[in-house]
Image (tube, rainbow, N blue to C red):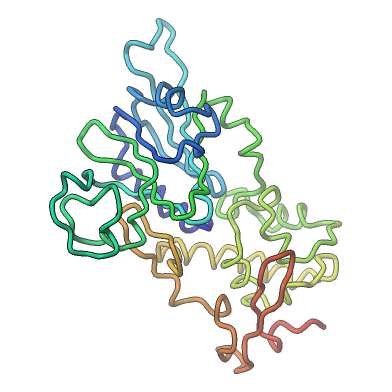
Length: 315
């Protein structure tokens, strides 16, 4: 699932590409994406004709702010809407041009031969096979498309008034670890009195938003903390190390445009570059670069945690 660095990279890419454009139509072959409104017809009415004013992130959610068409403005001005897209497990947003297969001409790439939508022209990073699962399309007024590629079809999409979406349960999120208010004092405040295991706690979106399996492993290795350690057993020095690790890992991952181990690609269909920086995530059996001990894995709450048994000792 895309985590904070991947979503932030996506948002930065979309800001450069789609602000100022109007949505003129919507297509999908999977209406289950629509959580509010719940039908394609109602959802289309919510966005078609509306202009994209801004794109930003909350947790792992992409928020696209829309302003109304002239016909829906009032003397006092109609309120803006928010189009919320959570990419979930395998989804990523792309911007470009596609054509229906029957109109696209011959495509020699075998992996694309059964897909409905084909990049036009068929060249560049957008033709990466991971970008071929086009399930949802927002047609823009300049002839381009904002498309969701989503192999597993787990993404969710909502549209509503700005106040309603921003105050909905979908955005009841914890601290933004890249926000200006993410101080060590705030971190200690949300962690105080907790007994949960530290890896599980880091991935709790209601406490700290945007961290998932990949980056929690990397942060805990950097801080030298065993992932199953109860929070109330971590001393102040280690908490400070973890706080610094959270910020440094996320900042570097954003700088390198995220991690593309599996499905994730940016808005131009490109891979991120943080994979080469990974120390423990999916490095089972490889030597720890700090001490040489082999990286191990364990299960916690249905998830896999990777760690160095020497650098991240249980004791």
